[in-house]
Image (cartoon, rainbow, N blue to C red; front, side, top):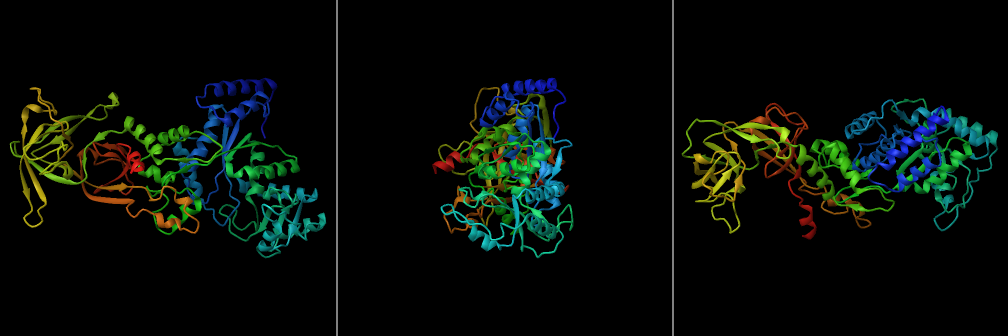
Length: 578
């Protein structure tokens, strides 16, 4: 652990940290605890946090909250933060997950620089720590089977009882522990357990397992080890080794804190301060890693980056921005108590961010052809269109206009209701950035009765979509020129689940049954303006009057593919009332 070189350096760090803390707009119990530690010089004026994911899956929005808390606080206090992979379970861990996690954390906007660590790098040190506890009479090798251990453990209302192997001598325990490492015993036949208190009201303190015999290939260490430390024995010591000052973690680990403290105190090594906060719960979503893995491995979704998933990879593909996710995580705040966050709050952050940055373009998702009979044939006129009214620096672009255009099929009705302000027989509407047009006639398919052409006339004196004579129209439509239109596939996403709290389904209910069969709708005959032809993957746009969309990685030079990121307006309030 690195300490300041002088009292002067320590005082300088404290002053800088306190200044950053005072400038932070959002205070909470974590910041208050850090302020207290800085005032008391508990860690020599240092603030050093970490994010310790297990590389057994992709990161999701809940992890984003944890990252923003741990890394964001360190940045606010001018401190340091580590990215550490708690990789002590070789059965579930893969290099693919390590790379995905690093990619997502960087995408969120955090740079851990050279402070990338792996708990597996501490295996030798952890082994030595375990031997030290044996020598101090605080750990023993146990031969109980998992079922026997469960029976001996007791319950919340009944105390446990000591293992019959608890009183082995120090020499015998050291020999057996070395034998475990040397591969002398079958998998699961022996464990190393801490010797604490089988009558403790905290089940975690009832002689917990520290090591188990497990012959499994580790993605970084191969077959060098046949025993692996448990998460509880690895976590606190890893923080200590790295000099972390504040271990910020999920409130589910609050009951584990006495155990972490016991290990550190018994080993007589540096002890960080652990502070817990409530995990993120989001409506119409599951965030449990095991459940997400089931969705992926059982092909309920198309991989970890499916835009319907709450994984950061999926959200990125859907078009969410890291700035919006960080805004969402900051707005929902930090608490100790569990609470359920409405999905609409996340969409609010996304919509606000994209409103400021996304270029406006025109796309017709369900096209019907409009022929402007009095517009010159074969003429193509280039019209000016603003790119983003929220950003003057975004400038303008030119879009082609011609005699034949596409409009949305839903923007026309032959017999409209009273408050329908779009195109109808004899009615005049504005074409965005173009002209006023009036519907004169409709051509239908003789067999199906479907409208195939709408014939209109235009007013050449309304160029730009405005009239000098003061007449006003109520409807404004978006459109795309037929000859210059680019074909596109558009994927419309709904929630992955129909149940508001799928993870809290009634006992015995399979949460899979709440999967939404309409979570994805694919529109294959869409038309977009030609300026989008060479759009790069992850480019984000506002399709006028429709929503925010993102270019998908499935796009090819021959076919653009767009994912709908979020509708233009919040639909969740209406859903809740319904």
